[in-house]
Length: 309
Ligand code: PEP
Ligand code: MN
Image 1 (cartoon, helix red, strand yellow):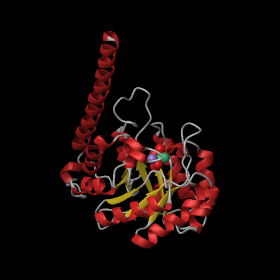
Image 2 (cartoon, helix red, strand yellow):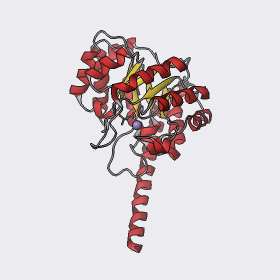
Image 3 (cartoon, protein in one colour):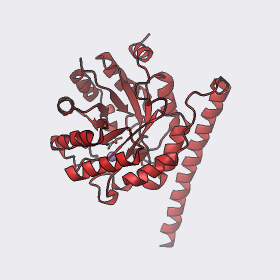
Image 4 (cartoon, rainbow, N blue to C red):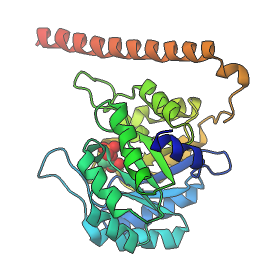
C-alpha cells in the first residue's frame, strides 16, 4: 500500500454533514471588517451554509492588483465565526500563513491552485503542519495534472494530516471561451477513484468566472456525487476587490442552493458496474466535445463580426 492508500483507508468522510454535501461560502477576498461580518451574517441567515470562507492573502496572476488584506483580516474572520457559530476556512500559501491561521482559530485550511503546482510550497506548508491536527483541502493545480494534485494530498498525509479533502476548481486552458477554468470533470472523477475516501468539493465560482453559469455547474457537481460546494459570496459583488464577475450576494447564493437537487449519495449497485462507469465516462467525453465545439463556434462568430467591421 502506498502512503496515500494508507491514508485513504483511515480517513473517513470527515467533511460530510450527515450525508449531505458541505456548503462553504464567503467572499473571494476579505476586504473590510464590515464587509466580512455582513457577508457572514447574511450567509448564516440563508440557513444554507456550513462553513465560511475568506481570502486573506491573494495570489494574483499579475502584480499591481489587490493582494489581500493580510493578517489584519484574521480578527475579522474570527469575529465572523463567533457571531455566526460557523467554522472558518482560509487559503494558506506558506508556513507563516499556517502559523497565523492557527493563532487566529481558523478551522480548516485550503491550498490554492497556484500553490498546488509547486511541490516546494506544498512541502513548506506540510512541514509547518507536522503534529498539527487541522483539516486541509487541496485545490487542483491550475494545469490538468492529476499526479500533482494527488502529490499535494500525499505530502500532507505524510506529515500526519488525517483530515484531507480536494477542491475541484477547473483547469486553465488558453483555448477556453466559456468557463474561466474548464471543469474537465473526468479529472475530478479520477481524483475520486484514486482517493475514494477523501471528500471532494466543487468550486463553481472559479470554474465559471461568471454568475450565470454557477447554478448549472453546482448541479452538475451534485449529480456527480461531489461531497460539497465552495461558492464565493459578497454583499456588493460588483464592487468586490477581486473576482467581481463571479461573486453573488448571500441571498442569491441561498436561492441557488435551494434550487439544487441533491441526489442520493449511495449509488445503486447496478450503477457501479463497469459498463455503467464506461457509459458515464463516454457522456463526460461527449460533454467535453460539445464544449470545445461551442468554444469554436464562439471564435467563428467573432471572426464573422471582425470581417463586418
Ligand atoms: C480563491 O479561492 O479565491 C482562489 C484564489 O482560488 P484558486 O486558487 O482556485 O484560483
Ligand atoms: Mn476568488
